[in-house]
Image (cartoon, rainbow, N blue to C red; front, top):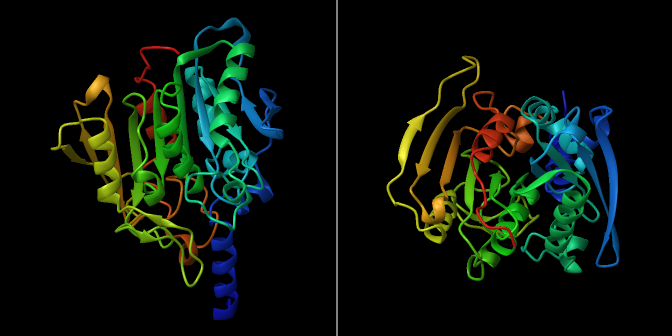
Length: 325
């Protein structure tokens, strides 16, 4: 049996890496023939990524692009394991492209201004990186520029929200898992257009308080986030949505799983956008139906009542950015 000291050390280590993605790097999924390593130089820095292409992509046109952002301490390769290659399988089935970029020293400059992370301390231009990546991939592959989507977990979820603030002219919709809206960005975020948002939040996340406030445990602080309610209302307000959502309880797929899933849909919204909030009762700092990358004591439960890969793609595939800049 692990001692309290070893569990405490594991917790501190996980928090130092923002808990999400570090373990996934150790046993990342084996690349397939349609997985390609890529590099691009942005702001004087060499940036890397893994690209997954559907079979026979060369004969296709107007392929959607899904960008998946890792959590702090993670990598693009690790995200393939964390998601159990689920997004890649959907890409092969429904014919779209998936890209898994890497943050600088495994972190994204998501707007929290943390001194612990080089990407934030040096104000690395991650918005510019994602914009350049979209442009570069669109010039090389048959990408539909009106159907570009971004999703991420934890640090990658905050980065997805920052991209919605700063790159709405390039992105049709975002998905945010285990990340509230950053207090730092709440006063300055002014998207150039409405953007559809799906939020997946665990009520028992031990690292990111459901009710908002300081992120982290013990004396390791990772900035402040809005509550789940306030995060939802932020996007409802920005998109000028109807204030009264439709509410539903999702089916129970695993009777042994004590987590439960509720959904709130805010629509109609300006410019055809929509805001969806998925509340995972008892869920933790995890990718729904993904790999339990650390013990429940550290990151909470992974729900098996919802598959984040499927939920994200179902949300994304009907969204389209009407105008291309």
